[in-house]
Length: 243
Image 1 (cartoon, rainbow, N blue to C red):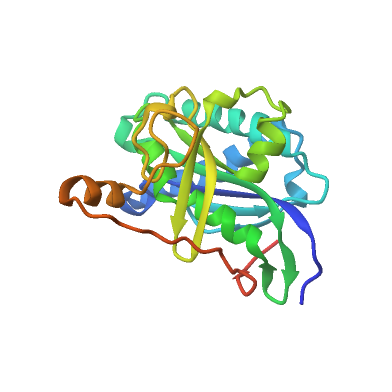
Image 2 (cartoon, rainbow, N blue to C red; image 1 turned 60 degrees about the horizontal axis):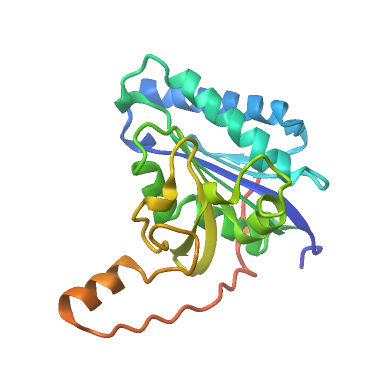
């Protein structure tokens, strides 16, 4: 069993990478690595101390103990967005590099073949969630969509440790595989609160609305649908990490 510990976690993934040609994929890979590094430098986050796994269009990183949560949520993401806009300048929209990113602070202990615990599962599910994908798709001029866990939002954004305003974020429900939870989404330069995000409360950050399928069934068929949500059990989850 790994030693208990809480770490700052980052996940980044590119939109539409699989459908791009080889040249574009190569350019995207180089750009992702460079832009993440530049954002880390701007935020004062020593990337040489990160434990990372990179897979072409994605990055999963476990930051060292003491890494600044406000710096990762604020300066890092704002710098990453600026870098993406510079990279995409002059390109046709179809050739833009657009990223989803997620941040969480949670349990992540070193195991025999990587990190284990609920933390890596949660940050990965937020980054790959349908709601974060929908948020990015709903803002065609945006280059970045960011999802932060409830823990990070409450401790960092709500407590005013960043330059963000609470109303810039939208609370959503995240459902993926065995995981069910909540997160807060921010899309630079775009008001996501008015978007019809799947599983999100429409028009605000209050109570979470039913899932889209549930609403449709109730409206169109007059059915009463009950949905039960359990808790995630990720004690056995293992993420391979290379350094």
